[in-house]
Image (cartoon, rainbow, N blue to C red):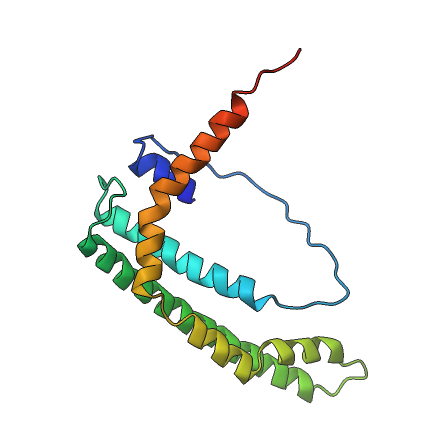
Length: 171
């Protein structure tokens, strides 16, 4: 997705999207666990991506050279997207906790106790309070560094790919 942004706004490519089906096959794991660091990274990354795409929709001819005012605008958008995602996540957590309570009250011979235990562990208050605190907002310097290295990272990647592709091929 960042690739498309770079190639559209920096290199001037005409980017088109197409939909195609993908089959995801989950691996069965005995020890199910939630990787909170990964979830936090995805949560923050999705907010940053949404802020960047919103900004670029408002400035369609932007060439990814960010002024201090641009950075402030993206930062504000990012914090708005983080807040909206946090509200949606909190609503989901409340629903999950309600379902856990309902499962605990079931009067059946086979209670899904392993599932209930895993859900209680994943969605306990201390864990989600920590998650909320650590994803509340990005610092100005984090946003500044991200925005001002997009083009540089893309150029470095292109240079590496050109070197890799320029090796002689034996037939």
